[in-house]
Length: 223
Image 1: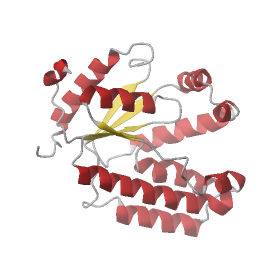
Image 2: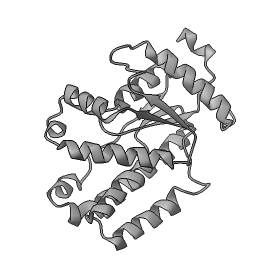
Image 3: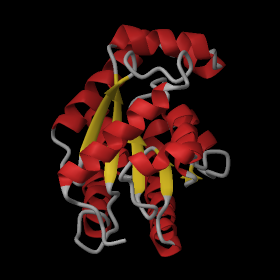
Image 4: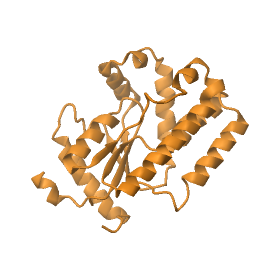
C-alpha cells in the first residue's frame, strides 16, 4: 500500500491483539495484516484434543486444556520469531494464565496444586528475558453493553446461549488483567472509536496510533 511509508512500523514487528470475546480481535488481525502485508497467527481451536472433554467436565480437564494451550502458543510464538517477525497475532499467550487459568482456580474448577504447577511452568517458559515478547499488545476495550451487543450481532449460537453474567465476569477479569499487565508495551483502542465493520478506513487511524506508540515506547528491535 502506497501510504505505508508514513508509518514507522518495522517489517519484522510482532503485534498481538488482546481483548474479551466479541471485541473484534479477528477483524483487526486481518485488517492490520492486509494493510502491513504481514502474516497472521490465529488460535487453532478445532485441533484441540481436550476441548470436548473440557466442556463436559471443567474440573477434570481444565489443567490439561491449559497446558495444551500453553504448549501450542509457546510453539507458535517461537515459530513467529524464527520466521523473522512480520506477524499480527489474534490473542496473546498472556491471557491464558491471566484470565482463563486464574478463573478456573478462583471458581474451584482447577485445584490449587494444578494451578501452582501451571503458573510456575508459565513463568519459567514465558516470563523470562529469553521468551520473544511481542513489540506491541493492542488491547481492544469497550463497555460491557457494547461488547454484548457485538456478541448478539455476531450471532454465534454457543455465545448467544451463554448467560450475561459470564460475559460480565469475563469483562471484569480482562479489565483487571490489562491494568496490571507489563510484559510488553500496550496500545488501548476503544471499539466505538475504531469500528472496522462500520468504517474500514479506520484502519489508517489505527496504523498511525501504532506507529506513534512504537516510536514512543522505544522498544523497536533492530531492523
